[in-house]
Length: 367
Image 1 (cartoon, one colour):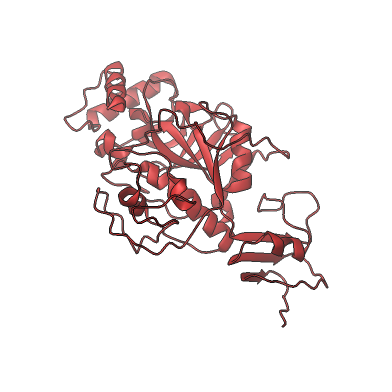
Image 2: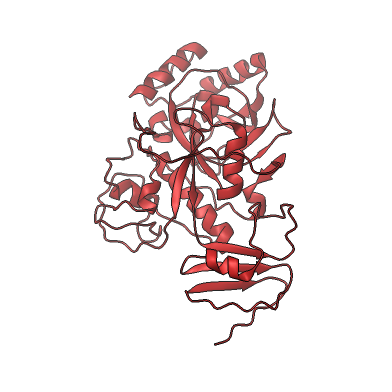
């Protein structure tokens, strides 16, 4: 596989000789530490699941050669002053870190992650959606040997039984193997749409990725994974120049402009909480191609009505609706309408099913 050649090139450049399974040995990690001291790395390296497993089991992103053909692109031009710091985890929008184990299924975890985080933040529900369903039931030939972002299966593309929408983990638990599909399953969540950020074939501008994250939640991206990335054990990752293929899919959940040379992303990985900083990494903008093929999902579950909205962002970083009627209009059938900060005598006729939540007040519902 092409990324195996890239790893061999990196190993040769470091003076490392990977074992038969291409995992990093204690001697390899010691060599990385020495290199870090010479080059001024601002992060630590150590043993973790990222060093114990073969490289092909850690990664698995295989973008189609013409992945941009027919794809939807959104320039995500900033519409407001972007904050210097933002993190969806601070807003209760990050579900627990997962572990893809011995299977190159990062593409499935980076597909499921943004949707789970959207559901948690917007609906207040922690969901565990099935990566195994995507792995076993896709009709594109994606396997433990690799695959591409698979949001289409949460939107309109049918699985092996022709059914659409995310499946609960409990219905098809993850086993990290290419097991048979076994559909049909109950499909509990759908997205409205999804899109790539910026232009085809490039890393989008930092500001565009930030805007996409503010508007649509955590963003899935591609990244290269040299040995230093695999052995990352905390700090600001700034080993940005080694060669290697774009081979891994992860999720960005926020940023901080005050760290690193010009700012860092908060990157969420799928190698378990024992890797990095509880499963996360702080990585400098653009380092090892992080951000390539950035993409977001649109989850329609919730609309906000905020009577205190005065033009300044106040927590959700998504402009709320100013009237109950506007908010109710925006909710799709079966979605959630959240009303906060203030009161109104407004009377609204609701003609579709939805769940209404009130904060610091009450909502009267009559016949």
